[in-house]
Amino acid sequence: MIKTMYLRRIYASYILSVIVAIILLVLIFFTNDWLGSLPLFVLMIGSIAIIPVSHYKYNQVKDLVVPQSEIPMLQLDHLVIQRNVAYFPQLLFFQKDGSYVGTAKLQTLPWYGYLLSPFFKSDLITILPFTYTMYDESEREVMHLQKRGWFLKSYVTIMNEDGHHIGSYEQEDYRIFSIQGKLKDATDQLLLPIHADFTTSFTLTDDHKRQWASFYQGRFPHEYTHIFRDMENHIVELSDSLEETDHRRLLGVLTFLFLHIKR
Image 1 (cartoon, rainbow, N blue to C red):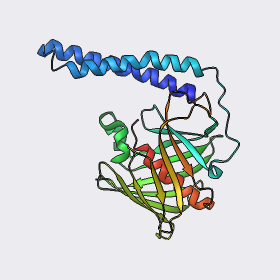
Image 2: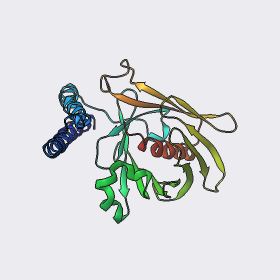
Image 3: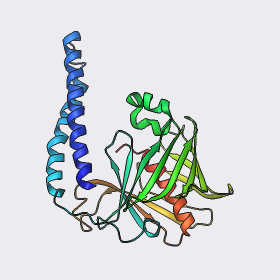
């Protein structure tokens, strides 16, 4: 997974560089506006600069063996969440020691979503309905997230691996700088209010002052493993006192939240 992630970053950097270069040349040819083309030129230089960095990091990890987690996803007290480079957003889950835990992938999207995807790409998850599936380290289905709603509010149904409804999550999508939502159980009773800001670390605590999760933003501590060296990672500590169903619900909410992060 780590090797594939870096290869995708390399390919994406090449493609972005070529596209920006073509647009830049066309713009200069027809307008001769060098000053107005400066932002595109900076973007092209930045995308080109990513290529050797990704090659260097790929060479560092290409021979590493990434072990599979020996602890089931629903029993972990933490997750390292990495956004994978893909046409539609994907998440990769690891332990701090570098063990691979699982992934979240798009399963279904309305037919018109594929027609709009060249224009909206990853922003589709904040606009259109979808179904995401979470898989464990052995590619077994763990749970499903089914989103409804358009623009102002998202309604997410959380289901177990058999498709049974176990909870729901509602999020106000019109907020720009913060996230406000509600995690509910299968009977629509409030379990956990969500107040989050991805520009800083945050803690998710219920009305009984019980902590469900904490998010730590920043670079991954090098003392844990060499696999994540110099990579931006999202580290979430999970409460070990949650029942399995609440653990599933929490993972569903975290997956939905981190799908919205574009870095």
